Image (tube, rainbow, N blue to C red; front, top):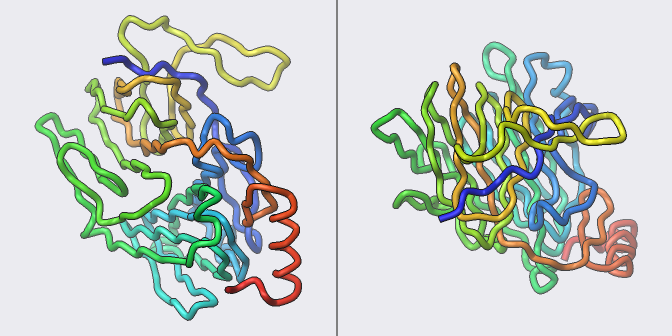
Length: 299
């Protein structure tokens, strides 16, 4: 068994999307080599309704899958195929855009105005870029949750873990998507398929992701021209990118740590990307935009 070393720890960055939604982006619209098959990850956490109520009005997707996981508040959604629904606290939607879909996502806060959720984009291989669109809406009560003797909790949003399997299935990247809480001061080791790229995103508390024998520092991104060796601590809104191995070890800090642990098999195909449309070549991308402009985008 080999513990995955940490490649890099970076803070998610403020950005504005949709009709003016303020959120934090952990990665996206850049080089996909380290996160393949995942393209983008956003943390839409806000307690000020004016910063999110404008939402994400009608927009297209093709060639990808989008995964929305809501922790608080509600996201109303609808699409060009006639699907309508809402995602509440604990719910998950896995949308396979495939050959093309137009949809909208409109967040609403809870009774206190709080809205919190995540959206992950997963790429589709060339053989499935033009597959028929598909939705998988899963209510929070259907998502398996495991509570270990030491208080560690794991929600299996997608994939299988510790003998439990999520109802979300048939996803091209064969991903594992876990919501993990480790109590204060506890150290846990979690299995991760060595063939997968993996990352963690911390959203409560903090801790350290490293082997006990590893050095007390890690190279991380800094604003300057060189990287700096600092303590390998990951706090709120930290993205942790892992190198190869078949286990991830986390040491929780004094407030415990809650994070998403996501992994998937790399597709290793060219990426031609324009906004919410992701194809393999520029010609395919131009064709998609031509169809969008001509009103023939939906198959």
